Image (cartoon, rainbow, N blue to C red; front, side, top):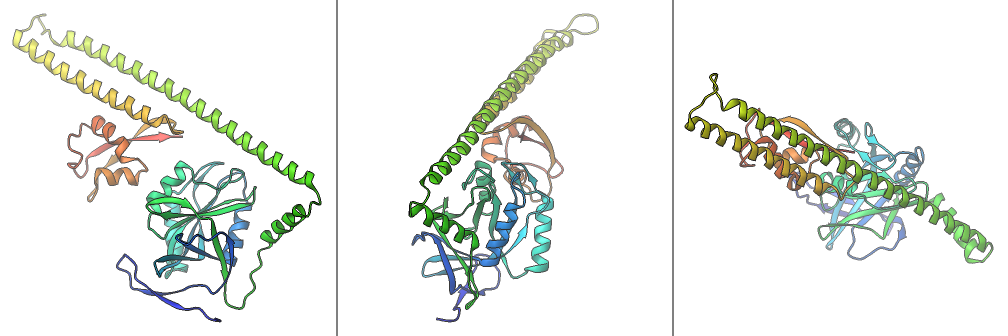
Length: 371
């Protein structure tokens, strides 16, 4: 066949159905599993993203990938035809955070240049440490790219590796293969792949077996270095969290001592006397205050203990003012907070009894984990 064929696409949203053309001229990279999403990435987009990844190997970089998707004979096909650089991100050697400025820029570029294209996923780099999705990457994908057709594309420009991740049976899994496509009649030339094949052919012919050994040693050294760095980082994080907990407990002890002193001073009137009924009432009020303080302390300690298994840093609190349409769960998602693990501490520190009853203009303190 020498031309593309059309498929009618009915999206789950209220958008008008459009026509998606599946590529007919493509090359296969890796193994294509029958029940996996079929991902097609245009040749120039593939090459541009490779160059983009190589421009900075000290920090993670990212883009938003655009295109179309369709369902044909029970299979999902995703066709990547464009991308937008994710500017204004907070990036380090091991993390990439999309800011509000990033999303504002992406949406403006999409409306201006690609109004008929959909966001079909995102791409980011993992310089030197391979193709996988970290816990933070999974959080991003689950919260911002959670539609069934949206994929994640990871490139390691140092190790010359790349791979796609898909939604499959409600979980995020790595694809074993994908397609690089172009217009019918246009040659597809992937120079980087050809260089890899040339190296493989030399090795298979037995020309330089020592080269293979040295390559393996280099890979093992890099892996060991990264593993050691990760262990040291986690150890330091655990020590810091332990010290933070001890400091918070000491602070709470001081609060309790102050409350006890205030209790002694408050139960006496100006003449140094008080009635029995007044004394009982004041003691009961002070007991309620102490109970509330103890409840908040326990919730705070429980919250910090839950975060020990990750790479969390210091816990701080951010003031947020409720607006129309807000729910406690929505507020947490908008601020990058796991609602279910943070719900207890949020209710305690804000004195909220029913999470479904919050008011407009109410100020709520939110726990934030600072790396």
